[in-house]
Image (cartoon, rainbow, N blue to C red; front, side, top):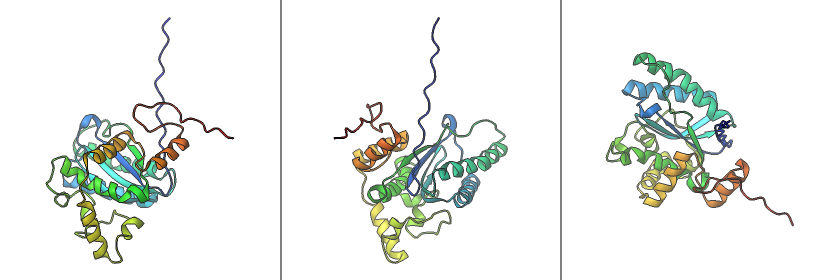
Length: 238
């Protein structure tokens, strides 16, 4: 008799209170979930309300038709899940009713990547706002409407955004912070850096220095490294 093969259990998300996390959500079967301006605006409204309700501070975002990227700091281990669930409960019925459709809208679970704040937060914020350029949607981050770039550089105030202390540390006045961020986002991303961050976002791996990642591997009980499986080796006590 042939033995049945049990499905592999899904890896539990590693959510760290008061630590920035990148969130990636994709459309089911690569189908778009934003089709017009009203859709983007309704989603942003729901996200803003959910972030306030569940104490999950949104620092940066880019929304595109088939995927979205968020940079969020949760107040506790359940904040991110509750925020995303609330958004889904409101946005999915709205979208399905509007377009006379049914069924799943998202591609399974959203993916989360803890981000080392001091080392990588601002770089990841800039990375998220560059994505529409790399996707060929616009020529410059400033040309894309559905991102946090305009807020960070002073073109408009976005009520969704909760500025991170590292952003505030860029200058003593709003003008100084906005100018500093504009200079920061102009720093080129090299191909190896882009590949490293992209892979981490896609896999739901931490983004940060080796010691940051190693600490999270120990906490999670598994490795976040390509080609290596299993638990991290136990330290020998002498």
